[in-house]
Amino acid sequence: MKVLIAVDGSDCSNRAIESVAGRLWQEDDQFIVISVVEPIPADVGVGYFPVSSGGIFQQQYDDCANNCGTSGARLQTLLPGNQVEVRVVSGMVAETICNFAESWEADLIILGSHGRKGISHFLLGSVAEEVLKKSPCSVEVVKVKQKLHTEPKQSKKSQTAKA
Image (cartoon, rainbow, N blue to C red; front, top):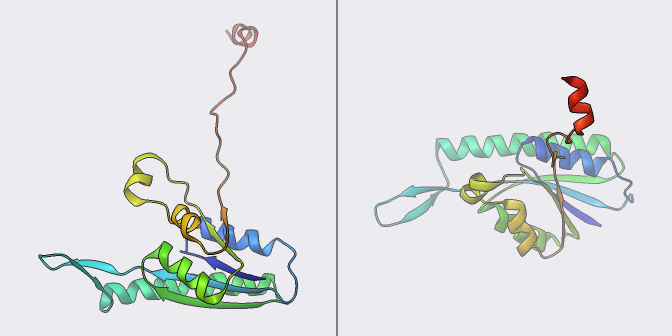
């Protein structure tokens, strides 16, 4: 099986790596950890064009390379019998993950979810959601466990006992 793990240096990406490492895999299963550097749009008056060189891009690339390398090394340590590669790629994140998965002939994409809701989801979108929609293969989204309820309602009997 060929497994692509997309990371961005966040806690949810780290959880995805730990999730992969905590499973039993065959010795011939292959893993590739990728991190995507997204081009920064620069306003040129009539539209936008991707800025792919210079200080900000280089810093982004270096951060992605560091995150990807750390995640790949962690996975290789936890799965010493398997092949683990790392790669930094550039492009729009969800589209690039899906295109890379297709060209690498991945069987599974694993990525973490930030769990954004409401206005932050509306403004920032969801890479995981886009990958789920456009992926050429199966996708697993590793989420942080969240409480759905604040506190259980107390019965009237226990409320009066406290008073």
